Picture 1 (tube, helix red, strand yellow):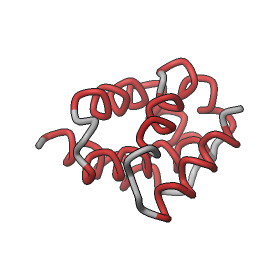
Picture 2 (picture 1 turned 60 degrees about the horizontal axis):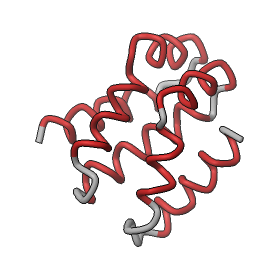
Picture 3 (picture 1 turned 30 degrees about the vertical axis):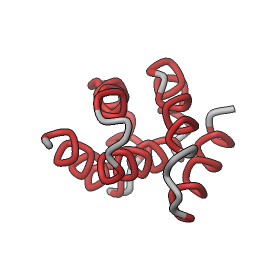
Length: 101
């Protein structure tokens, strides 16, 4: 689905180093769009794991954390951890919770 392509694109952008770029991504609505992707495809492992990875990368920047919290991404990442039985994803969810707490 397009949600997977969008999530993969967000990962590519979020991997790029640079606080300004990540902050711009989140301010431009990426966090709420990732939230909608996770909400629309809650049982699609590819979409969820990719979206969680993007949220994890974006949550590493202090300047983006408040917007990620407001978008609801933290709660959806926690929800995803209940059925994403992938060690890397669970680690990402733990880091997201740590970053956004």
